[in-house]
Image 1 (tube, rainbow, N blue to C red):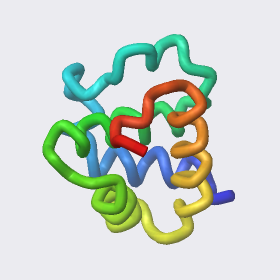
Image 2: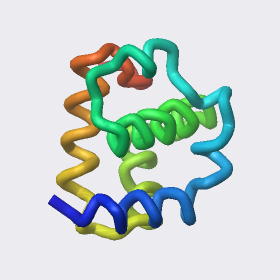
Image 3: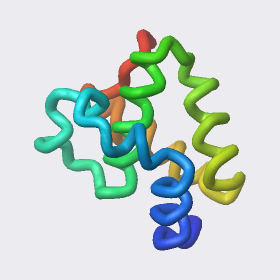
Amino acid sequence: MPDLAHVHSALLLAHEETLGDPRNSPEGLDRAACPPHRKHLAILAAGASAEGLSADDWRGWVLDGVGPEAQPLLDSAEECMRASGLWPWPS
């Protein structure tokens, strides 16, 4: 698992505008059992989906900003979002 402090800093630097936009907060996020960094990724997923990006585009967008070491976190976030009903793309 990547260093979460590094991932958090990289997410904020790369995607501060998207993370700070309340329109990107998916309904039910506050009740989801996902840990905080995964919730940040859920916000990014909701924003990406709203902009018409695919799930693969979202993954690439995040990895470009954070680095490939974040792949396990992305996988975990996707699993948590799907389990919580937050996955914004059709299965």
